[in-house]
Image (tube, rainbow, N blue to C red; front, side, top):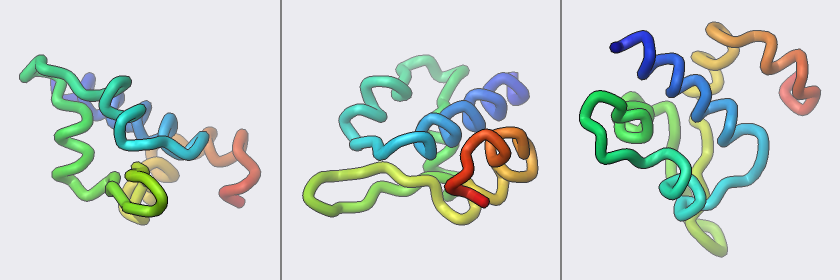
Length: 84
């Protein structure tokens, strides 16, 4: 099951990086009550995402999250020029 959660965490990181995401939007899409798939909770505990307060609460990928994403899914960076 860990591989499933790890892959979903990578999906979450990609999703957050594609566009500005609010905390509310992120919770609607990624929070789960299933103890076997704690994607948001694990990503947050691992320091891969952070919530920042600007004019509203936003979710961002941390430098650690970007490093993981680049190591595990380098094709994401090829498709998204803003990361180069």
